[in-house]
Length: 291
Image (cartoon, rainbow, N blue to C red; front, side):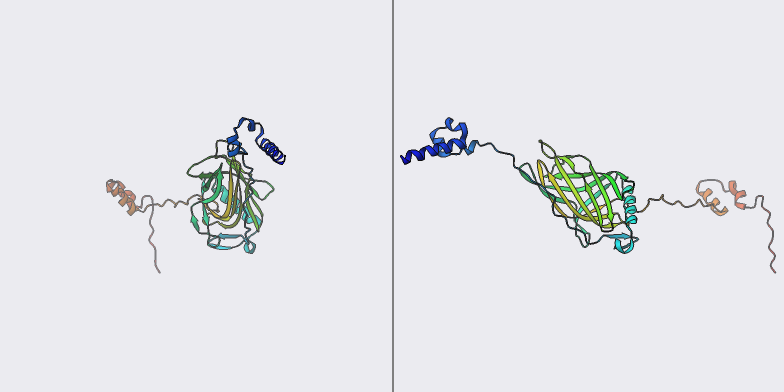
């Protein structure tokens, strides 16, 4: 009697896990695969993505006139904000290079930043090597700059279509200069779009050569997910100083001798400029008396 109860309990368990498919399967299939795993429906995995840890800069260094010093010692919040506005306006519609750099020396060791990501179910690496500044505008009454950025994104040799990124560069005080976006979308898979969000804490600004350095954190959410953090440098084509027109030398008047030489070089007859070479037409010369 106990064997019959055990067999009934086994049938009930198999029916609960296999639903109606239990009755469509042979006894051999039930014995080989009791839970029918071969025909189980694969569920889309639940993905929770958050920004990678971001280091906080101890102090912000600014270089100008070939000298570097912390902002706190020699500059005000307003000065650095005005300098950043000038730098971004100078580089509007320009492309800035991005590289992974050393925190202490600010030297690039890779011509890109790389992030480990998963595209669908495939592990990959995402690379960003440049960004184009498409638009720059100031917020009245606020120490912030509105920008439109276009990042050059690649992964596993492919270049996805990415929307422009609305970015805010905010100078809170001499200790906090943050570049943060609202998140831009990239089409990395056939199903849905991936959102990429960037946070950039600036700790180095070189107004002489157009360098901006800081700690970054980049996170992805959607069909492609992942992210990473580190230290990177932006190399802008123009500096942070006002762009002045190239000075031109004033036009120099030629002396009579120079006129003769120039006429000779031009193939003219020297007699045509003999009167000019004399240099005394209409001029009365008075002798100087020495005492």
